[in-house]
Length: 242
Image 1 (cartoon, helix red, strand yellow):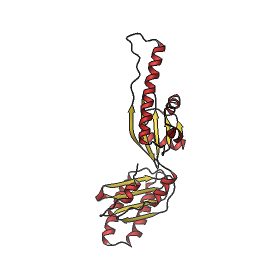
Image 2 (cartoon, one colour):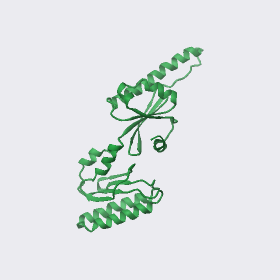
Image 3 (cartoon, one colour):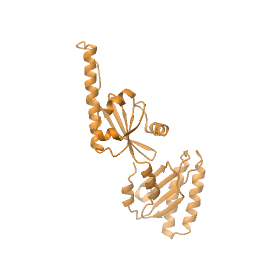
Image 4 (spheres, one colour):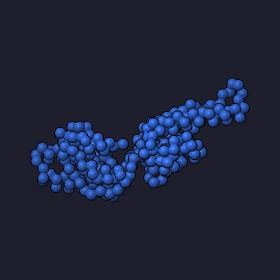
């Protein structure tokens, strides 16, 4: 998840590019490349020699990025400084106005506005034995934890009855759900982030009962999903349930 506060405070002595491109046709990188070229040409006319060289350097990086993409037809924001090892690109949910700047600081106003309209969220993909926790922000999803509980096994030795095994299973599920709920409470004790729950319906319902009151109130979207979802598949699933 992008650290807007950190980027806002950062300074780039070798200069950094801030770029916003409005939405174009899906799967057509040529639109974005052409718009970048036009913006860069107009900006170069106003720059000194040092800034012009830095703009050409960073624009080349963005062109390389675009030529490897299959654009989703969304607006694009890019923040780039090769000397500082910075390259952040975001396909944004809302449209933007064209903007390009090369300076020691970044132009973050447009992406900050969108972050207010689309705040970060946590996603928990949970079943009886495992919980995968993700952070979602402006269409991007990152996995931040894979919390594996005690496996639930039926021992052959001892000839457990079905009732005894059911009590054993219930106890393990309780421990697993409780451990995940406590982990989430430590990370977000006040329930300040929206919380999305995914996984089998029965497991989601039981797990929700172990959440603190603050986290229960933060629960928003819920949807069925297999535990093996990739981050890319989860990003696509969120578009459907949004």
